[in-house]
Length: 545
Image (tube, rainbow, N blue to C red; front, side, top):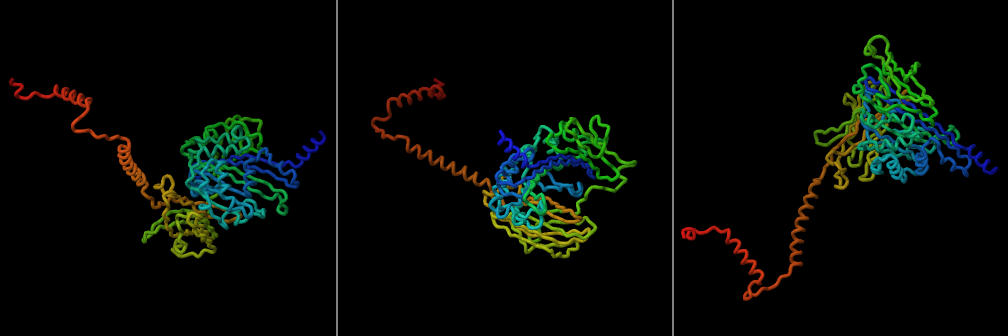
């Protein structure tokens, strides 16, 4: 008993510290829509002072064990996965606090030194199984290694550098409830309590924009000492509801109106649960209140003792019409990006990306484009021009050519933009003739080309902005020909086989002319003639008689 007491006392002394918090934020957007952001933050401090008891950290109270085991098994230091439906309209919605994700699936992983190439496919397949998504199409043939665009969340981990990072996107991936359900199960309270009760699939997928993501990384607790490592993870849901569909005539909104589900209990494992609201107008505010609560404020901290049937959001403005004031406190996107496909006089197609500077100051902009291998970039035709059609020389140019069925093309640029300037990046492409087995199930719909990414560092903040993805048509073979050939060959084989079967199975015998036919055949013939004679018409001579 004494030994067991000291053993458990020793284990408790090295037990990892965990924390978990939930936050809901409502934003009233300039176009009348409503943005709801759910943030679920995890923290787990891993103490590795004694290797003998290292396995004690395999037990977690709140941090998802499956995520920890995934990172340890595949030597992952940091990863980001997002599944998105719709396109974030930066000009209408502004720039979100946590950033926006591109359409479809996006994944980047920072591996340990020397493990990026041999662990990428294994890690992708593991995540595909976790979230029931078709991430297996993010193979090495559709993944690249950008050098300057993506930066790790962990600033003090020495093992993170661009050579150990892999990036890929999959615009054709459609998010559905099969992806949302396993995502919910990573939360400590699952669907029994907390904000996860509000995640009604019918309402989420009936919105203008919906995105779920998972960000997990390791970081050193101290800047000088990495003996203690802290595992952090943030799970985010970002959804934009159509304001006209809600029909908010009374300027009063509630969670029950948005999600058609009551709030219920607060997650008992959460250290902090809060709700905040913000209006894009400086002369307006959104006040939060609960049923029977006389205290109203812009931030509401929920307690575990109470049960919340609904939470109301009341929009309050100063005297006068809301539209009279043009002062806004929403973060506008400093850069706007638009991507499209054009065709020149020579008939060759070009990928064109327009980058517009919305700031009144000169900025340095970075550009990344990951193009699938079946669209070969002709980098010698690359042109970077401004609105006056003057060429701009990039200060940084990094290009990795594609290899058929091996890797995509990676194009990275950095250039300066004047205030209010629009820069156009254009490059010609050459389409590759695919094998008939390499086409997607709906080849006439076209092949997706991922969105371009533009990044900007200004005012101690990093902005990452995405363009729209492209759908490019490739040469499609006549898939009806195999069916026609199959039908024709089957018909010919049937005719030939039936003739051969007749020759092989029937028995032929010789009949003598003297003996004639057999008795049975003579009887059948006589009976046949007698029956037919009954139905024959009588001749004219027989009628006159």
